Image 1 (cartoon, one colour):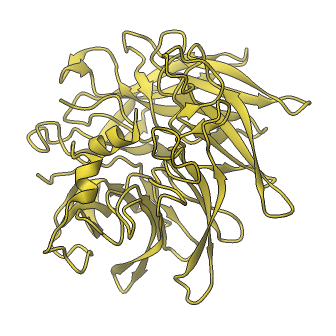
Image 2 (cartoon, rainbow, N blue to C red):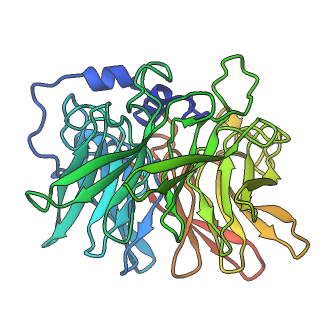
Length: 457
């Protein structure tokens, strides 16, 4: 059965991402025949593209799969367009055995630096089996992977979200567990915000600094599983899946999730401020990165909760006094006609409309669930209201579970991935995932094209 409630816990999340293999078994599985090289020499396709895609300057797409590939631990892939077809190249394959030095199962979107190198995270594996940050550098048609940092649980565990650069070339990100408060949050730690600074003995030496340890003290958030975003003043903003002081009425007192800000100080310390704690009615479990509009308002999604319990789109606006006020822009319906359970990050178009994805919808039953998810648009009207429109509903062969949010291409079309779907004869009859394009027609209709169906089995 396909797993629909994604990232409800870290162990469950990794079981989902890695084909129902438990976290413990994955980390403890040893192999005397582990490969000494991890670049893909056999050309085997990956599966389950949990992350979204990005473009390079030439119009090629890049992304990651969380599993399979030549060594079973996921891949980094490239899609090259030519004559209305897209050719896939596997740039790198990760292994899936105990002690994989480069990490296992990349599940976040990649980013480029100014030299054309790719950067990403893997939530497990690495030298301490607690995840890693890596770089892929192109040279003469091949890509070389370098491990920038391997987490050891004390400095974080499980970098699920993407990393971002500051203007000086430092990397910032989150880990969903680990940190200084390792006995809290189920005994696995509450998560961290970290910085990686290049330089030192060699160009491959990066120094990690933990900027914040989440501590589940009843007000702080915990389990940050999305990437971060900077404002113009250099402050960091993010979300935590649990924590905050909002009541979720679940008897556990773990909190519904929070939006936080980290402000740098003159002494190098960063101060955390909780901007908003969710309370079920306004949503809970924010699982995606935030996005700013042109005037400094923050936008995001909660995977659950809201008026009808199936997730929300929210806005946070800063007042003159420095506090933030939340406004619910949309609550998704119980019947799934407009989608259920938004998961991916939002994006704006030039007109100020928002676009995102949901894991279920648009309402008909298929594969044992309300169909395979949606891409939706929220249109901002002159009266301040937001009206939702489903641009596409997935049904299986064209994809299932669009976990990642979309991006715009230079052609004005939307591009992203579905974690499952495509060829439904593969990957336990759920499909191995797709890369898709949604193009706007002259009559307001959006037409989907599947650019690639992953085919590992």
